[in-house]
Structure formats: C-alpha cells, structure tokens
Length: 562
Image (tube, rainbow, N blue to C red):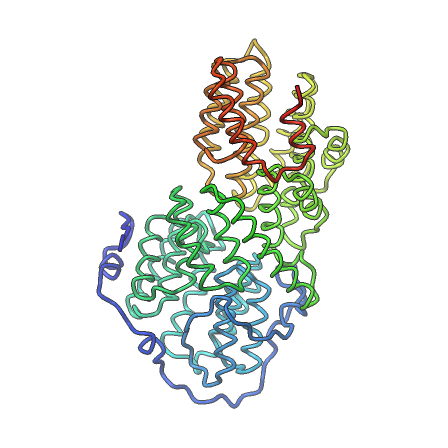
C-alpha cells in the first residue's frame, strides 16, 4: 500500500500512521455499556431555521435506507434503531447530504434522547450549513449528556468545541494548530476509531471548516491509514477522491470513486464523485450516466419526501456538471434545459453566491452564438441584488461586445465588472467567492488586450498566466469551465490570425483534455493552417466521432456544408 507522509505531520501521528493497528470490525464495536436512560425526551432544535433550512424539514421523520454508505460506528446507545439511524446520519454527513443527515440524527434522538453522538453529528451538519450558532448549541447539548457517554464519545464532544473555536477565527493559524493538536491527542488515546482518523485528515485542510474537499498530502496519509485498517470505509474512499483530484492524479481518484460508488450505490454524491473522474479521463458517456442516476435519486427524494431541491446544495452542483458534460458532447438542448433550471433555482442560504446559479445559462447562450438572447439576461444580472451577479453580468456583456469587435464597450463592461468585484471582496466572508469571481474579469481583460495591437504583447502574457491558472483547476466544475475557456482562447487567436499563438493555445488545450472533441477540432484547424491535410482530416474525424450525439444544429454550425 502506498502511504503518503507530510513534513508538517506531528511526529507521534506519523508513528501512529506507520503502526500496526489492524482492529477487526468486532473489536471496533466493543464499547462501554451505559445504562438505559430514563429521562424524558428534550426539544431537539430550538430555532425556526438552521442555515436557511426550515427546522420542520430538518426534523422531519425519515426511514432507514439501505446502501447509502453506512459503516459500523459504535455509540453507547442500547437501542438498535437509534444506532442504525446514527450510522445513516454519519453516512449522509460524509456524503454531504446535509438535510438527510440531520433528519437521520434527529430520528436517532427520537429513539434515544440521550445519544450524545447524535448531537455531535448535528453539530457537524450545522457547521457545514454555515450556521455556527446552531452548531455550538448542538455541541452544548451533546456535552450536557456526558454522563451517558463513553470516554471516547466525550472526546468527540471535546472536538466539537475545539473546531468551532477555530472556525470562529478562520485566519487564526494558532487556533487551527490547536485544533489539529487536539485531534492528534485524541487519536493517540483512541487509535482504533476511524471517525477520529477521518477528522484528523479533515483538520489538515487549509481552514478549520475542512470536510474532506481540500486535502493535503498529510490528509492523504491519514485516509490511506484508515483504508489500511478498514478497506471498505466509504468516507475514506470519498475523501481520497478529492485528495487525488487536488494532485491531478485522476486515475487514482477514479479508483476510489469506483469504490465509493460500489459501497454506497444509493447515495447521490457517491455516484456523482465517480462521475468527476470518469469525465476527466475521457469516459464522458459513463460520467453522464452516473450523473443522470444521481439526478434520479435526488429528484425521487424530493418528490417522495416533499421538499424543494433548493434546500439541497448538491442538486445544483450535479445538474451544473451534467449540463457542462452535455455541452462537451454538443448536446446543447439537454444542457440548456438544466442550466435554465439552475438559473431559476433560488438560494435559501449564501445569497452572495447567487451568481453561481445564474451564470451558466447566459454563458451557454453566448457559446452558441445566441447573443440576442443572452444580452437581456446579462443586463438584468448587472442590476442584481448581490455584487457577484453584477460582476458576472458586466463580464458577460463585455464578452458579447468583444465578439462584435466593440472594444470600447468591452472595456466599459470590464471597468464595471472590476468595480463590482471590489464590492464583492469587501462583503465576502471567505476566499471562496474571490476564487470563483476573480478569473472572469481577468479573462476578459486579457482577451481585450489580445484584440488591441497596441497592447497585444501584454495581452498574450496575461493570457499565458490565465492558461496556467486554468490548468491548475482540479475541481470538476472549474476544470471543465476552464476547458471551454482554453478553447475560446484558441478560437480567438485563430480568428485574429495570430497563427503562432493559436498553435501555442491549441497545445495548451490539448494538454488540459486530449479527449475533448473540441480539442480535435482545434487540432484540425491548426493542421489546416500548416497545410497538413491528412492530419486535419484525421483530427476532424475524431471530432465528429466525439460529437456523435451532438444536436444537428451544433454539427451544422461546426461542420458547414461546402
């Protein structure tokens, strides 16, 4: 087994990583018996909303469901149903299905009102919903039940307060290190608890809010250790997908994605994660199939449980990536249906991220030369309630103006976008917003410079910086969005008759994704420029094969009859 180490890992934690802990499932389940509680049930949640989600939804009765990634996770309850609901809650927590996780933990508490670990789970859910007050309140309730908890469970409760303290000051490195050290000390005391190991892996992310998506090499070492002890732990496979994606090791990520989907076939996010790296390794048909199944699971859930999709952040993420995958194959009508749904879906929380819901639809329209339809949408976005919407609205209007060779109008839109970006950064709570918004004005600025002979050299330099940044995108949405932007750069260079730069840009596109039909199309165009008819025909044929399922109007646009 490959085991990664990290220079910042505490020495004793490295010792634990390299140790010979191989507990059996039976050993893991041994826990200190606790007397059956006799106290009455207490109110579970005192607020009307948690993280913008109605309390009535979070406490709504839920059934036990098979194959959503459950794994034996011992608690002190003597109630088998409470235990089963707790393990279901943990599976959903690790799979980012936050509403279903909260419902499951609440159901566990209905079965056993003294189950401290269920409140620990709720605290973690509420933190992911970005409701720190609710997370602290749940942690305090867990602490109030300490007399019913084992020493190991009390340690889990301690960690809630350590993490929440660090979260309250995200930029405070000392508090983050204190939290890491706290986890490390508790792992040392209870080295056979995989949940503690997973928390340790999460703690080595950049921020104390880490939940497995921003893993470092330290995190990889820890998750690999979990799999050494428990080869079929779904959460360890899940977090390793994210970790290896961050290292651009998509084949390794794919292996863990396949395992996660196998271990949790009824969990929407498990199938979605498998799709991530099927897409990046050229298996787009299979990726689409996995995302369609993800979508079916989610829509079935909303229909059967009677709640709106806007309360599940994952739905928008999945249909966004599915739409981009349809666009990848030239299936524009199917993509358009999904980006329209995304555009019209409201956000109950994180309103500053509204632009994420809205940007896909006009962007798709512009990519298909439907500027007349895109302009009024972009104009409306420039009047949006949030600065992020306004940034993207001005950016889109600038891109449309540039296509029409209206450089002054494009510059005016760029100036307006930059002004709104300053406002967005002032209001941002984390660097998430900046990471998503920043590239768009930079992209527009570089393209404007490329169009202007007076500053073209600077434009090329800026575009090369942008290309390097785009190539560094490893998350699924940024990765494929970067692909289409790299394609645009190659197209613009070709249209401006900058043949050497067009060749350079086409090679960057091919490095990012050699499987993309648009890459083959760009390579054919480049071969035509060089008079290499054989290569041009071969690459054009590969593009046609890749776009075999494309809409007829898309094919007519790209392969006009002579």
